[in-house]
Length: 382
Ligand code: PLP
Image (cartoon, rainbow, N blue to C red; front, top):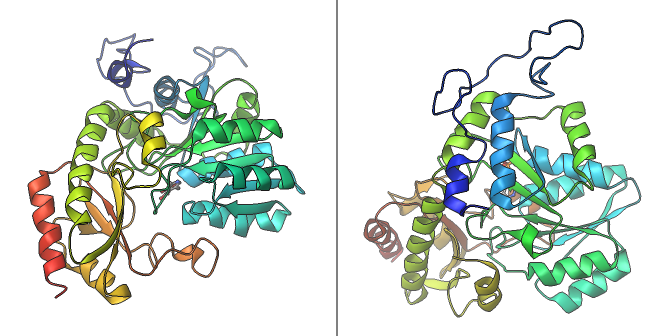
């Protein structure tokens, strides 16, 4: 198999057969002419069921994650919804990390809870503790984010895969933060990778999307069935934009990681900062595992600000280059307050985040400018 950046540029992106167009055209048609009933020209009949632009993206995603097959959705949560409905039935159980993305928790707790799907949120970073919970609950799915959102916790994917498989569960890894450029969960034993492609995969904050990538054929046909039957597929423009972003994923992740590492190191000794969460710091509790399963440490970091909620709110209001906004993974730097923004849906649950936490999505701008912006905003806290 060719190298990552070569796959990112070429997989699913062959020049157009008909015209030679180097960039495959966007296929907008919702339907396809048939040469007689059921006599399809290239296997396409209706764009919910299949669309060449979406197929190109899916081929690319499967190649990047080293998967058997990929499915592209209208959002990350749409992908999660289809995966859960494919694998679990009423009465089944899901074990997930106790710092999963708030929307994932809301889906599992608030939506699937009503369909009698149980769940346990636990610290999956502690493998002995995780084994006890998994052996007691006998889940169908073990669901992990590593690094996690927003606390950047690291979980040993290979170790957790073994524990999940011992009880016949599948291991699902949300690889949104790391991306396949930095971490390849399927090669470490995961069964399914999910992405909010809205984030680094798209990379430019201009498209919402999600993806599932499966290791083998065990669930592929059933996911394909629900993908079409429930219909939350990505549209052709979205698929095109996502494919466009993928071509620079490798070099973007390198720059995001270098910038975030520098900022994490600087903030570590800043007097206004209480704690820095970044897996690239040797002081991070997951650093040594991160070193074995990630090639770099990504562009996300969180900090706890001295002075509590007020200081955190002032900090996010003070930055200029870092835009106050939800989401992450674009080329531009963003700052947000998880407690009442991205993670508001988990307030009052076991997943509630500290009220002095600030999350940074470090972009690919010049790191000196980013640092100056952060230091100036922190100075204004007094
Ligand atoms: N997983 C992670 C780690 C996320 O951060 C998000 C969104 O922020 C999602 C999944 C959900 O994806 P989407 O917003 O594309 O539905």
